[in-house]
Every structure is written in C-alpha cells, then in structure tokens.
Image (tube, rainbow, N blue to C red):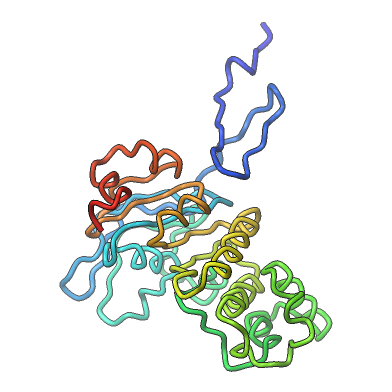
Length: 282
C-alpha cells in the first residue's frame, strides 16, 4: 500500500522570519540539538548560581536567553565555552555536550573548544592592533593560513560577512579602536568568525550601542544564523522577539521555561515568564 506522506509525516513549521514554504510531500528531518545541557549546576565558592539547568540549543538558529539581572544567563553562556574555568572558585557540575561530545570531559583541549565556540562580549573589545590584525589574529594563532594571500582572503571574507568591509577597506591598517562603537562590535564579530566557529555566543552585544548600530547588529545576527548556531543574552524583550527563533527564560538561577520565541511571548506556560515579559517582575 502506498504511503501518503502528506498525511503520515509530522509537519514542523518555523515561525521565524526565515521560514520557507516546503513542497507538498517533503519531509523535514528533525536533527539532534547542537548543544545539550543536562542538570547543569554552577557554584561560585559556596554560593550556587545555577540549579539543574536542562536545555537543548538547536543548530543554525538564534536562541535568546532572557531574565532579570543576576539570574544566571551569562553564567550559563560561559559554561558552553568554559570561560567559567577562568573564575577562581567556580565549579560546574552536570553534562554539557556539543554534537554529543562532553565539553567537560578529561582531555578536552579548551583552546580548540573556544575556537569552535566564538564569543562576542557586552562591550566591544578590539585588540590594540590594526583592523586587519584584529581579524587576522585568530587565523594566525590557529594556523589557518599558509601564506599572506590566504590570510588576506580570510580577513576580507570575515569583514564582508560581518558587514564591515565596505566601510573599512581603505582603513585596514588603522587601529581597530579608531572605529565607532557599532563598527567595533562588528569588528569583534568578524574576529570571532574568522576562525570558522560552529557556535557564536553573544553576551548583550548591543547594550552599549545606539539604535542605528543595534539595528545593524540585529540584521547581521539574522544573516549569520544561516551558518552558525547563535546564543544571545539580552535584557531587551523586543530584541529577543526580533532576532531569535527560540527563547529561554531564567529566574533566580533556574531555567523557568524555554520554547519557540513566538509561543514564549504570546502564550507562556509559567506565570513567572508572563510576569517578566509584561514587566511585572525584573
């Protein structure tokens, strides 16, 4: 008996602005999560900051982490590339895997991990080097270019993907610190993607920027999500709604709720989520 795919297959529809209509009968494959966090607990000395966090991060989507200040968003973000290792007295318990591989397993090369998981910080932090050398830095230390021509190609490509090359192509030897705040943040994004990471972590990347620069960064996030898995911490509900496909709400160190952004913002299941989104807490 012939199988009627249109009646038997499970249909998964994306609610975000990158949605496309699929041909009738085409089956959408459900892929395993890019990142899986299971029972993550984080301690700063005797103080516990995160409690039993269980969260899947989907590949090539933008996931927004929202919640009041001090709720654990950035702490969780820093677990993914083990930046918490640099904080004295910080301990992480639980399982966190990228593509099924435990990032806290013995023998994991943290330098290689951080090459796979790029990070963009709250305030732009260009190195005290030229625009060219800022972007070339990672490629040099990881040996991604065999000669000067290859290195130049990596720099130009990264600046183009960050939407910055047209603005700085005649200024590549000028200091990165000579750029505007929004340009500096895009320079930092170009530096992060120059080493071809799989994941980009963004810790409030627009908090220090004006509305015009913020809009440009948000457009860039949408473009980059075609090729990268992006996790963004933000205090702006409007920004989370604009840029993300999935949202996770943290409160007092707990993951209260996560799911598709449209659902979280329209029909949250938990009263605490609703209270935060409507401004009654936070």
